[in-house]
Length: 154
Image 1 (cartoon, rainbow, N blue to C red):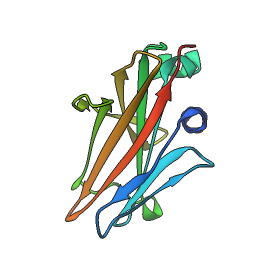
Image 2: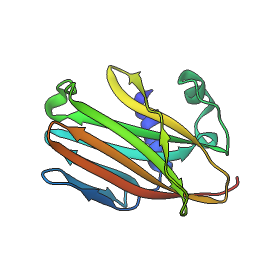
Image 3: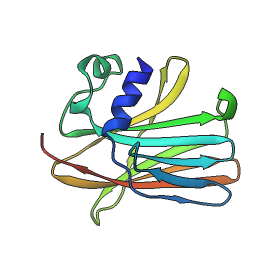
Image 4: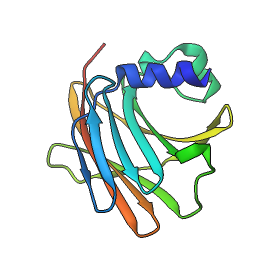
């Protein structure tokens, strides 16, 4: 089920560009439409989707309301070799529209088939373009994934 949920989110998410801080690296994948960063031995993926596009059973399983006015931010962090994530890894996220001040997005851990992803929601007012900033800190390394997402009425 995790694969289905992640595939739905990634397939419908839109990513822009990534920015990194040494020694981390960041990139955006146009084919998969997701933002990605590498911090040490951890790879982080971020994607955003309107919750109305989620399958009803997936939304119910994870306690999400399906709505055109709610966006779901999914952040997946995986360590090389499937090792457990280090306790020093922190992830913070913010969203902003236009020149408005960025609003923090509360991320909560979500265990799916033995892996932990981080999810948060933000209210949207389609048509709207939001900028997302996801900051990953791991020891002395840091990376910021920055991408925009356009939301339209459905």
